[in-house]
Length: 282
Image: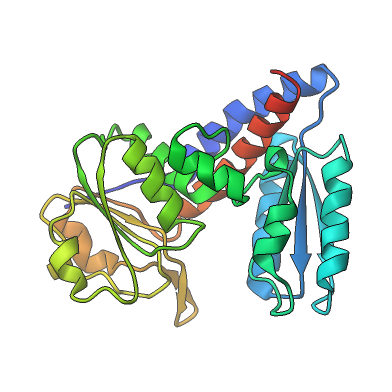
């Protein structure tokens, strides 16, 4: 029977440490502040922002939300980003996804100062990530590695399969795992016969948002399974993995909820503090 990888408790432990660091910064007159730009009224986005705000308040980080209408123009968005770039009190900027169709997301991300890019999505920071000299990491990918480290699950020499090639999870996670000498395969919607790849994985990560996608026959005996997916089924939150059936076959598995989700929020706060310290030479 597999062991659950408890992301919630780990997130709380790391938050306590981060709170001490933030207190030290504040004692020196430095207040970690990051800005979230939310365009439109997507319910899941607003819920995520509230979750981030709650954690930020607990730690002592200031989160400022710019709630913009769904009709927001591209130019006015760029003007806001430019203003935040110039504001010396702001240490982090992020655009809450998704954005309305009239917004050119790539252009908006390019406008964010890389030194304030808390999501690690600007072109220069993405390049640094793949080059291996990054100073900020995407929150979810950072959270996955933090969880593996906590349970002393090594990546060196392991076969890793990631289902999902998003710029937020799949691609950056692959880069960070390659950095630790894992052999990484990325699968996606056009990959044929997923099981031919997944059943050979020492570590399997699913991040596509497809409930019960991963079943026992797709998983290697004693593998480690990381479920990043979040789906709503019959008013319940479930992941991409059929946990009930897969858990008896693996060595470790993340629950949903309570696995990667809490660590994503905590890791975002850690990136804010990293950027704050970097800007102040700490």
